[in-house]
Image 1: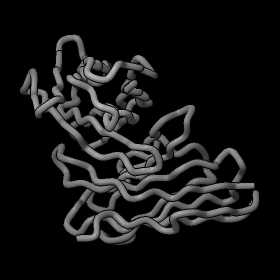
Image 2 (image 1 turned 90 degrees about the vertical axis):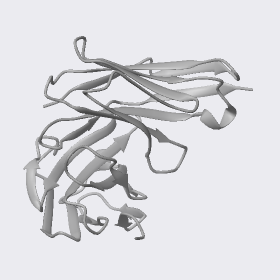
Image 3 (image 1 turned 60 degrees about the horizontal axis):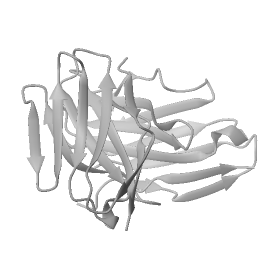
Image 4 (image 1 turned 45 degrees about the vertical axis):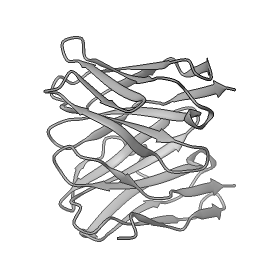
Length: 111
Length: 113
C-alpha cells in the first residue's frame, strides 16, 4: 500500500517567517494529496488539497506544490502566526480511495 | 448534518476486556476509515470501507482487532481482548469516493490499564 513520509518531524519558526513541510509518497497511482491541521486535543481538519493534474495551489497564506515525477509534495505557510502552531499531516489517496497519512509535523510558531 | 459522530469520547477499561468503538458517518458518504493515533506512529490507517465493504484491513494490528459496517450509517471497531498497548486515540472519518475531503469524528480516547 501507499507509504507517506513527512519531514522534518518538528519545525520551529519565528512569527512572520515562512514554514515549509515536505512529504514523499510511494504509490504512483495516488492522485489526491490533502493536508490536514490538528490543533491540540482536536480532530484533524482539511486546510488545502491538490490533485495530480495540478502543480501548485494557493489559498491566502498557505500553498501546496506537487512534483509527480519525484513523488513529493510540500506545504508552504507564509507570514506565520501563533495560531498556525499545530500538527500538520500530509496524505495521499489512490484510485481505490485509500487515504494514507504521514506521521505528522509539529509546527511551533515563536512569537 | 452533525458531522461524523463517534462514541464513546473516552473509554477506560481493564486489560483483557472487550472494547467496542462506534462511528456514525456523515449521511451520503460512501467511504469510512478507522485510524489510530499515537505519538510514536502518528495517524495509522487500520481499515477502510467503500460502500460498506471492507477494502483494505492490512493496517489492523492483530486478530484482536475487528471492524464491521453493517449499513451505510454505522460502523464498529472492536478490540478483544484489549491490552495496554492499545491505548491511543481512535478516529473515524468519512468521505465521498473520488478524492475529496475526509471529515473526522471527535475521536475516542482509549486507555487500557
